[in-house]
Length: 208
Image (cartoon, rainbow, N blue to C red; front, side, top):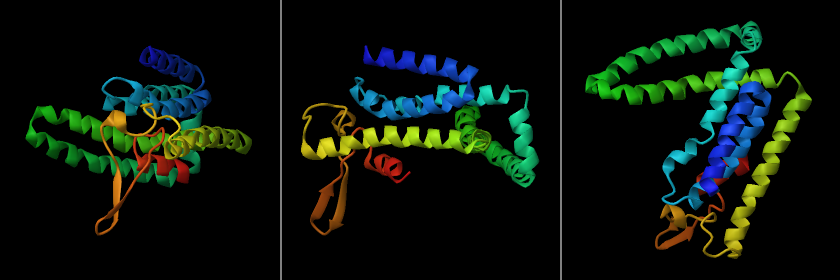
């Protein structure tokens, strides 16, 4: 039931993002915040759930690009050097893509994944550039992110205090993994993850 509800949330969020790309950024934060605990509460903890935000992100970008090209035109006008350098970078990807196909046509999956990974940053910069037109709007988005992250980081405290033993949303029992760090010979510390899937992910969000 939880999984179906989460899928419904992703679908609704994607539809909203298609009509309003600015709201899509807020909804992407919500999906990103919830995806780890929902994954851990889903039987088998499927790894594909780390990409739950992707439909909302794609809808957000498509919504932005559908605004008559105004945002893209402004981006190219104010940052022409960045745009030109980026397209040169994209050209350098073609030899690498052709090289990948020496392993067979089945390599298209790797090529597609690589293309998405390398092209996404440009769209991210364009979305950020367009959203930052109004500083107050940007401040609200950052506050929203900080608020949700603060709630999520409480999972580390809950895990440390042992307040919810057996609840799979906390810790890594659902992922069948234990994170440790060796600090010196024969000594190690057990790392906590709280609601997140790993301690490094929790650290990234805490630092951000």
